[in-house]
Length: 464
Image (cartoon, rainbow, N blue to C red):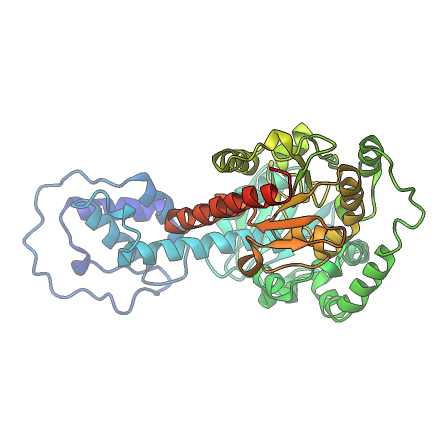
């Protein structure tokens, strides 16, 4: 193979070999740089002479994995690809066998390559240089784990089509002049500029958006492994930001305790609706989404409290009307509980999300954000004065109890509040939607049992 990441050439060679009946044991793959699978040296041919060429079949599932796996640095990958292609001829549904050793190995290679592609898109940092003709060029240095440079080129061309840029790597370099993409020789990190005039602006922005209340070091290292840090300008800020996170979080909480000191206690649902629409006391309220007010009878005996509005709820400005709300409606109906007779709201009034392309993916609110928004929930409770509250998930329970309970241990129990209201805790319906198979069936049964218990609690408190 002249180019180890050239899928089209590999496919042509592999199809020709399969068509002539050359078994995986009789074929070895090597690359122009001399690398290859040292353990794949074929034995002396024992198969019969090549027979008449046969039609070669490969389904979409294999092709999609193969296009990614071919970029992996594992020297055995081409042999693995060929073995799977060979087996597909007699077992066309092989790719559906999630337990097959070859399918598992191929999927792992493809997953690692796609992960590396994602990291390159996330962690390439361009720095500006002025060229001899006075024009600006943006240069970045990156060290990919696998041979993903060419596969990723189109992303950067589309993303920065109007800029002139270069991405330098130890294997090759890519240069975009605004019209055409050119490939150059390998480079070193010293060929890229160490910093530029805008670096301090970026570092200042990074420090300002760092939220100590959301810091999970393990998760951060999973998403931003330390091996990338040496090429990220913001990385030198991270140790100090982590070291001061607890102190900054404590300051935020202390400040948040007095956020409503000057706020008049709302005397109507309209006042609460107007208040949450203007509330900017936590980062969620500042993310550009619309606050979602609760709905239902103002004298309801049952209040249902979820975590926060979702994408559908924020767009329609109504609580619990998305997939989780529809599941809840069915489960309440099965238990004989009338949702229309309940007041439905959320512990947090704005939709917290992270953008993913055109989609907005749910993000769980922090304890500090829930505690800040609790002031609004307490005032809703004071106006509705329910006898029983159904708390869906740990976040909603924290908004009611002031602590984060253990759902597995405390669900299906009557938890009294100081004013005599009973909180009945269960899992959030969105949790059930994320499950499948036996786990989903088991949790659906537990959810149904919890709602059956709710019906009895309502009756016992004169709210049935």
